[in-house]
Length: 113
Image 1: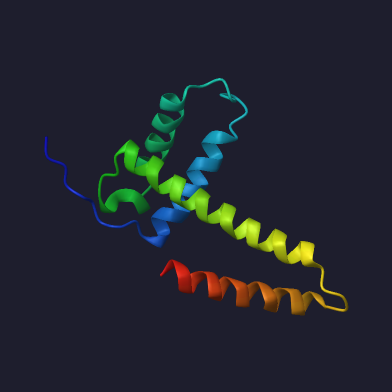
Image 2: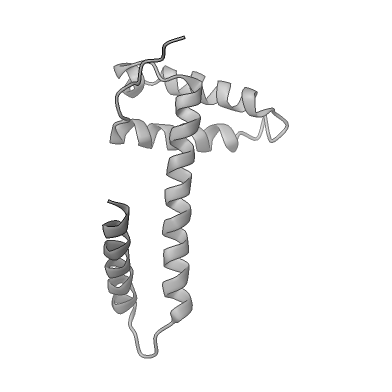
C-alpha cells in the first residue's frame, strides 16, 4: 500500500475545518450520542461541501490529525494566557499584560521553530 502525502493545509482550510468542527460538535439535533467515526464522517461531509476545500481531497484521517494539531496549539495558547493572568503583576495595566503575553509568545515561538 502506498500513500501519497498531500499538500499542507491553507489558512482558509484551517478556518473552514474549525468552523465545521464546531458546527458538527454543537449540533443540538445529533448531540453527543454519536461515535467518533460518525462524528468525523459528518465533519468530512461538511468540509467537502465547501468551495474552499475543493483544492484537493482531504481524507477523514487527515482532517482528524489537522484538528488535533489545531486544538493542541489552542490549548498551549490558553495556558500561556492563564499563566499571565495568574501572575497579575502589581500595578500592571491591561496593555502591560498584553505586552507580556506577546513577549512570552515570541520566546515560545523561538523554541518551536
